Length: 226
Image (cartoon, rainbow, N blue to C red; front, side, top):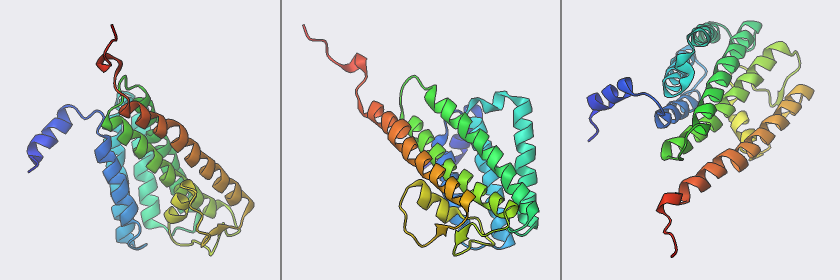
């Protein structure tokens, strides 16, 4: 059995590179937001987003930049409040979604910077890259939600009103292309293309490279021929 107290103590003493926990929180948030669009679910998702931010900050060097961190926390809390109190199709929610884009974007960059700085590829390195990939899907979902508040025309067909278009975002990011939801606006078409390209390049370059390095034996382990 897992010693919870020992694990919590270890996390508080040395929280660096806890990317498995971050990925677990991101997946949980994704699943929770699919339950309904009620105020309780949106509040729960906001709390999970803040927990993800805390774990992500403590897992990277972002915690050393106090001014930046304070600004991100304020933006994250303010954005969560706006999204909880206001309907998803208004300008207020669009502002809250924009704040979420900024916060999650900064977290993604911090995770990637920490992952790239690893001198040796470990399981946590790969989990960090996957967490960053998962964060990309959330970022683009918030971008679509923000656009829906700034643009008068519908972005998708059928219209994804009253909810965060997370499903559409991950379908595009992974280039599954089911065709059940399609972009109908010029700006949403272009953002969709950018997301699809980002998802493919991310998997084909960073994640694939890290996995290959993890599977490859270290140079010190390779026997020297006489």
